[in-house]
Length: 174
Image (cartoon, rainbow, N blue to C red; front, top):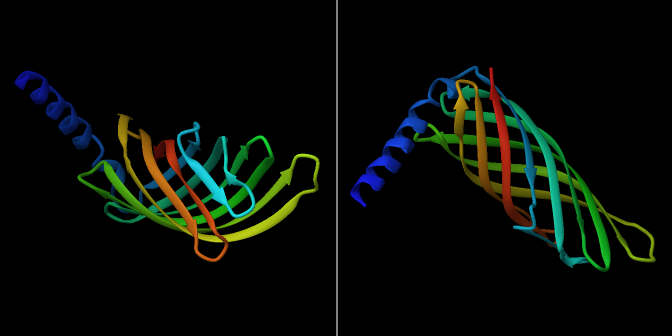
């Protein structure tokens, strides 16, 4: 048991030490992401909980200081259940801070244009301004590429929009 714990801690230490050069000031990052996987939920006033949710997003930005990145992004979310089809397009900006070299926390804000269509009905469009947060871990698979699993949450206070789940990104640093 002690050997396994030591092995796990050694691997975490190795992964943590390989990421330090990539998160220095003036490094650029491009981060395509996939979310949903039926592990999260989107809840709106009109649709209730969704039964399937798939999100695609691309973020890009620059480290404005060591360990601190500013990112902008564009994405889409596609969800449906028995009664609705619910799609959206997102524009967002975020700040991501890397602690312990590879653990990151982020906050973001953005605009979502969503349209849902009841089965047999016409489309209804809604616009949301939201705030969000993320907590993830950058697993460096090479000097300039990392896999980024993260938990995320988005919420709009005025429009009763709430979304959370798991996302996986593939970051490229240059």
